[in-house]
Length: 111
Image (cartoon, rainbow, N blue to C red; front, side):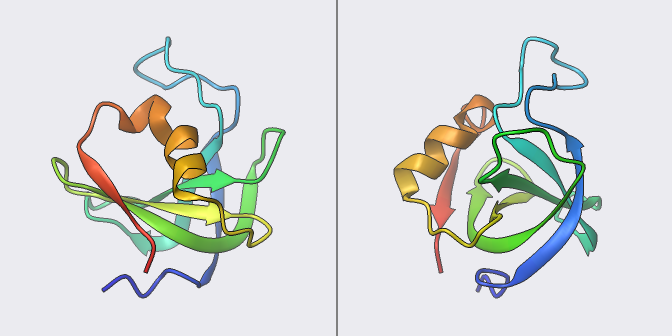
């Protein structure tokens, strides 16, 4: 059902670690956030991703999709990308994305 899990993807980081959300300046990104070039998500825009494994702001990424955060009350999923292929624990992923996903109902999909 989620064939992208385990695949290598690359894309653009448009909200680097430490940057503020474009509409909610109090929301600061603790991880790099961007999109997979050429892949359209459920909202009709390029597929959003949380990029894990970097301790500095990035402009581009290439990594492995290790999970999907399926939003139950929204029309798009968020892909979780590990830069080095590390298989982060569910708890670590949920903690890393909580800054934004706390406003949505969802579940983490691993396979």
